[in-house]
Image (cartoon, rainbow over all chains, first blue to last red; front, side, top):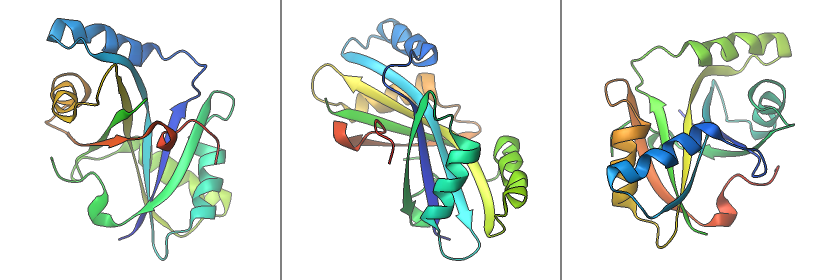
Length: 87
Length: 87
């Protein structure tokens, strides 16, 4: 079934302590070539009929993102593009 | 700067109470054509040099995803494709 994906990330000027914690852990794994890590949310919305981007934008605005500190983008994906199998 | 994006979602057979709560709130907004909502994480990793997908996969395996209950996918994006402007 086709889905709409909403990606919500903190605005670039907002500190991301969760991402910073991951970035700080990387040298202990031997990873020294990462400049930054930012952690946000990915929301998959499955519609009963045709995927509706405007409707998804309305949902994101009202329920999924905090516009004071977060930006979001919206795009439609086919079912087989979604994250449902280990790469 | 080019980035690697890791999308982490709960496996389809794992219940997602957070997504269910959003789905249950939608009829009160007048939205009745959504079948399901699943909420996962989107992690943006910025490398100091070339983006390294294998390195990103290692980081995701060790730090970002719980392979017992989550699947993840990895892809490289150009900086201007990332979520940094309201649509």
